[in-house]
Each structure stands twice: as C-alpha cells, then as structure tokens.
Length: 166
Image (cartoon, rainbow, N blue to C red; front, side, top):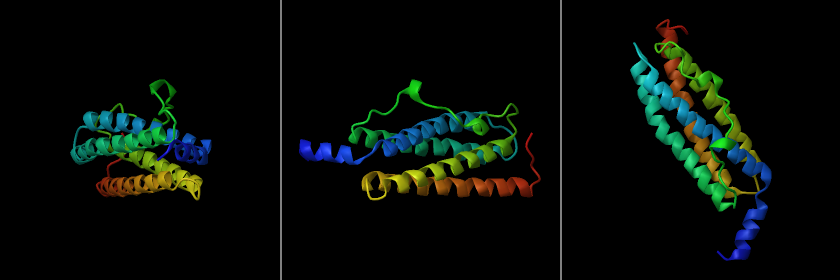
C-alpha cells in the first residue's frame, strides 16, 4: 500500500469511530482487571465454575483489547495509555463477601450487556465507512454475546438453587 492510499484510508475513518474504539479498548482492559480480581477472589459452593470461566475469559478480553489497539494503530491513532482510560464497571467490582457469586454473575451480565450495546453502536458508525473495523467489531460482538449466554446460564442455575446476593 502506498503512502497516498494509507492517508486516504485514515481520512475515511472519522473521529466518532476512533472514539468508540478507544472506549471499547478501555472497557475491555477494565473487564480484564475485574475478571482477574473476581476469578481469584471467589470462594464457596458454585464459585469454582464461575471463577474458572472468568479466568479463561481474561485471555479473550485481553485479545479484544489487543485487536482494537492494532486497528487503532493501523488508522494512525495511538491506543490510550492507562492515564487516559475511564473506569465505569461499578457492579463488576469484587464483592466484600468472597462467597457472593451471584453479585459477580450479575456484574458480568451488566458488563456484557454494556459491551454488546457499545459494539452495536460501533458497527453502526462504521457502516459504509470502515468495513475492516466493522468486521472486527462484529467478531467481538459475537464473543460478547457468547459470554452473556454462558453467564445467563450461571444466573439461572443460581436462581434455581435459591442463591441470593450477599
């Protein structure tokens, strides 16, 4: 690709798209932090399967952030450093009680739903403007929907067993 084509590609991607990508990147990294903390912190009956799932998802969420960072670079935008990253996942913070598995599952579901809505906005913003970023967002959206489905199953199981928030 010559320099003129690269400049044309960068000019076609507007700041709305790159801002949405930066927000998604920040959220993915925040999710990594919270999944890691919760996967280590959880104890008690029913915690092991949830903790193991969170630990596995850390790698996948970090992969999402990595893909977003590479795409930002391809578009000539520097991925944000830690001091530029917003933190918003209040319900995904590790609970005071390490046996409160239900609050973690509910927090994961809230985060996954927020991620799904965000990637839907990114996909819409890319429509007809940036097919590569749109394709990336569609792939990540599919992963987020899969995570949500798994944790909806955990929540149903906890409800069936009468497990309440601590």
